[in-house]
Image (tube, rainbow, N blue to C red; front, side):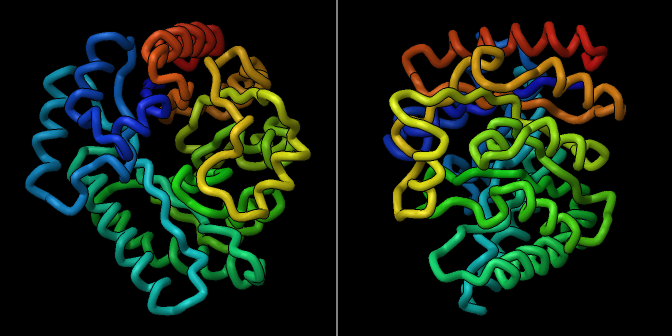
Length: 300
């Protein structure tokens, strides 16, 4: 099973301040991390410039790295039909961008849980969108990976299908396809008030990729986080922290035991840290922990 890294700790530098380029992230990871590939985020890519994508792919390949996933955040719960159609068409382009980068998967989400949104209608909109993407995924040989996600850092509201019940309902509305599966994130299940192991038991045969993350709370509680989630806010709650994998609330022995039991062969991507100054150090520690656990459970 291959190990990748996602630059969570450098997203501000890559997406907002623009003090780091995607090329610099590739070089940094290739020089300092023992990983097989990288996960790239839509927000820092030159996605509207097709001619700029191929050099990024070639650069990664020259450094011995593959692109594991395009981390994309479609907002399919748009109540306006024209806005919804625009999201679907943009997502089709994201799948093509993933293919141009050589990525095996493209993450998809349900969309924001806007106040007043009818939940069954929102789930139906998301299912319709993802189902419509399947022919594009097959055409470009890129798998769609639906994540049990909390909230894109640049969204105002959390995911509609954040909690397990809604996530499983959304899965049930999407027809089975070799081009569709689950991107499992145990931390997001914790934050939703669900048991990450119970969720994994439900979806283990459909998991095609995983975000290896760990979370801890600093000065707040899970109950407070859930109350805040349904009030307008930009990004994550201030007391919600990403930490070094293996040092937070997740039980990776149980997680990897379950994945091993179903012969999981997909990418595991490190989603670690918010401290840019210690970002590489934390990613190194997370990679060391995960390599050891992957070997222990015969996933390496």
